[in-house]
Image (tube, rainbow, N blue to C red; front, side):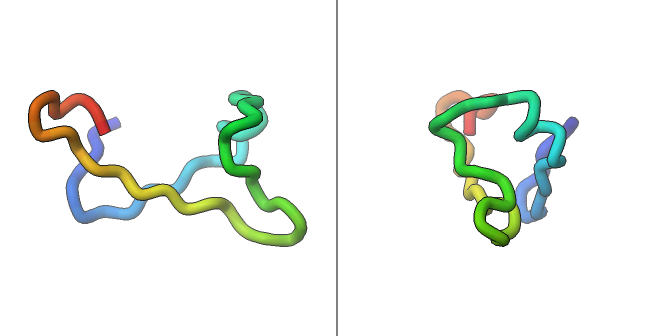
Length: 49
């Protein structure tokens, strides 16, 4: 998947089921919706966000 600047991307429910990371914000916890993440591209290494 190509990530393009200025676009909004949504993470599928299946990712949260697969990841099982206790430090990852919970998906749809207590009636809320998916968490939102903000990514900033590293200017020295553009493959990192």
